[in-house]
Image 1 (cartoon, helix red, strand yellow):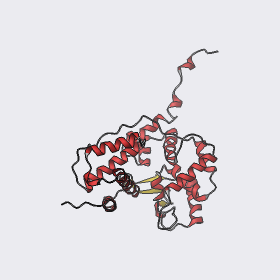
Image 2: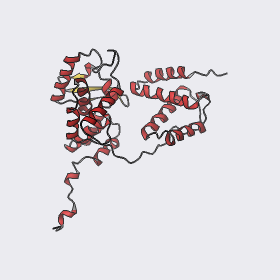
Image 3: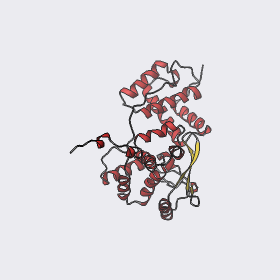
Image 4: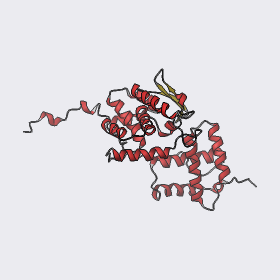
Length: 286
């Protein structure tokens, strides 16, 4: 009789396996969260006895009842693929590599003026430094909270992003005024390990806290458009394109594996749009 692991044991096993393969801390947390969610969906059924039909029904439930986004569906698919292919090594009649269609939507981008208003509305030094770094370096929120003090290279004016998405390190540039803000923050808070410490110095800052004070700052700044912390990363990329920076360089700064992922910003940037002259300008409209 095959030994059946309990959910808590599975989560622990998944954590160890992901860490051994050097997945990012955010990915480890996300995959474990998916496993918890999936086990609750199964109710009294065992994770070990899942069939292809159960998985099909689960993704239909996520899409139709939970109204899960494209990224959430992809996350659940990746996590369950890892569970059944790498942890349990079970053969299930289900396509774990199915293509989940992505809706043709463009990301929301704030103008430079809106970013300035947002930052001006923040009086807390720690909060302001966090939002400034996310925008000024085009960081994902998970990358920001896992920054260490040693990752700031003051002499070369670079920030090292360790084990980012895709298990790949990269460097991003920092401006003089952003470096000055970081130094001011450091003198005030004196972090020991993580640049932005949580309630305990051994823990990174909470991503939910960042999302919370971002929403408050957005409201104070009078920005009514739908925007999240990740919008600052989209704005960083678009504003670089607006300056005429080569898209391949932006790809490196963002840590995108595929250029196609970065090219979406070309649909938003005004750099090329400003070169276009409307044919109406050739007409006499008086």
